[in-house]
Length: 177
Image 1 (tube, rainbow, N blue to C red):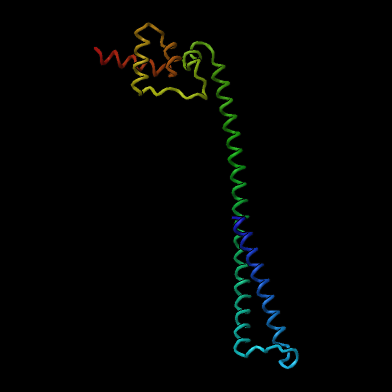
Image 2: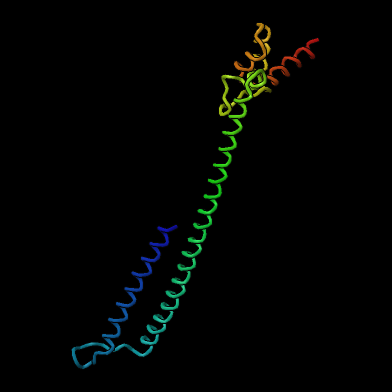
């Protein structure tokens, strides 16, 4: 957007420069006397047309400058609002990261049987876990259970929670009977 704004401003400056140059040439030629030096005076209708053209171009130029200023002000306001939101989101992210660290510390501090069995050891909190509803995951869990592995070992290998493994095994026993 800034590139467009800069190029429009440059175009405006060039056009205004051309208009000023044209005005100077026309005025210079119109002030010369026809007898001295062979200059030609502008006809009255042409002179009025040029003056109207110049007046209109000045109005358009002023409107264009006002529009550019408005767009610049709007852009600056939007940038300030975005900067504020970005700062707010950074604060939220820092607070969330702090809460996650605290939760991880509390989980690791649980120790004992609950801490060791609730989460698979090979799947830290940041890693994606398997989908327990996927047929291949369900088949793997049942196959490992038939081999005699413990629920905790199956949970680690299948990247599932202990409760999910127990549920899959319990549902299989219910529906196979």
